[in-house]
Length: 416
Image (cartoon, rainbow, N blue to C red):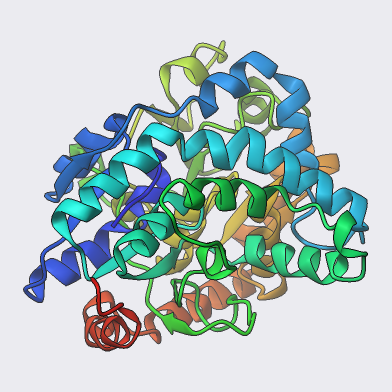
């Protein structure tokens, strides 16, 4: 298994790694050195490969210009952007993200390790193209393990359809060019399977999953939030409706410049008869001048332990937070403005299990109003319970292991 060093993406892969280990399979997890400790803390065999990627450094150096571009990419397809917009997104994502996160030293070291260890199957999260490259080099089967609705592949398919309408000499595809150049270093050809995987493992329930014509193995999402300890205060039932506020690392930087300050949010909800549990890191806490009486601030608490005690959650729409809340049957207020977070928030609202607050409504009054709706209208809790049941209806990681074994046998090269 492999992921670039983004802990949130790694966390979504851990339950399947456990299931494979429990079934008797050998599992080695390869990533940049920065992810070695989280891999080992999960009880898995860590394989550091290459040097750490520089994507985060690039984001800091380019600042608002780059984050503004990321924020404006339309993965929902609602704005109807044409081929020019799609080509621009393809070029900039490839140069500033995909090729940076899958840096040459990481790709080379992963290929070297695959040649040494000779895996039968490589499972990779959707941005870790190095996994597909290593599998192609050694003849292993390979599949993408999705952490959310596959908007990136849907956008890719739309782009390729538009591109096919142009004369061959004008079909510029930066992702294909980079992957072709990388594979050529190992004497292997490019084809679209390096982008799509030979099949997908999809952790979204049927009501949220996208149908894109790919071979898909559905799998239930199982929350994993890293090294977890249940604090003593969480062992007592809440005396008032408990609300979790968790904003992740992207919301308080330049990604969402129009988001209200934490002080404004706390002031807006200070008189509500609720207990707010705000998970804030040191940087976020430094922005707060006063903590209301109804608010408990903690740097970290495992969401899979906290959310079952909550009546609602306010968050930024990240894949792990959204899926954990849905799996716990908690109504959600999602303040989302970029990438796949928007689609998840929209789909949640369509299913009645929560509310989507788009950027132009990022106000203290809008957040308070949304929270009051979640707490006072029983339909939100009822529909959140239905979404919870939809998650449970999918096969567990343990259940899908035999199918992965069978798929590996069909797709593995004789040379593997």
